[in-house]
Length: 195
Image 1: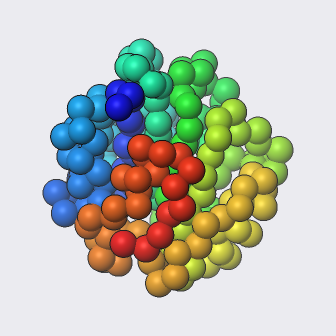
Image 2: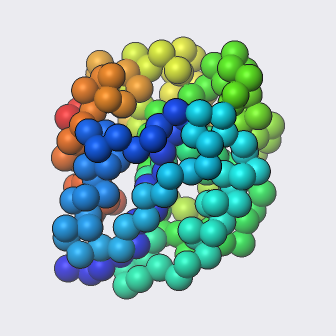
Image 3: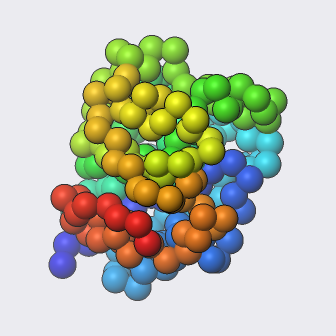
């Protein structure tokens, strides 16, 4: 098995609870011998885009091991990733592929002063994703009222993979262990399915 580096990024108000699928994923990948970073981003309840971008750059600056780096970003961090791409951060060069999970829409972010500064980049329609990227969301995500395809898939030229009844793919939706996200991490061609 080829060893890879994984960077797992959480969303707003996420203090990395042990029951969350991201924590579960980090534990499984570590058990398999991979290099896993699952950082607690600064001030998760009242985040600052620039602080999160600085933290992201720091993690991406660490050279990946073996088979390259895979990024898994959930919720607010999926939008953080798009800001990093829009700014063409040089640290993005060592990334092999990316999974964007349940990014909240700009209309939702605008409703909350704590995260309104994370509104998607204005040039989303012209944003060129430099890595193979998958977009997955629940077909009933309350933080994506426009739908993942309309809000992000169409502007980014991606096909949104919609999971029935998965809501925001968080603990409230029952997403503790999520075996297919582990399968995707190990094989980027895996079809993502409900837990």
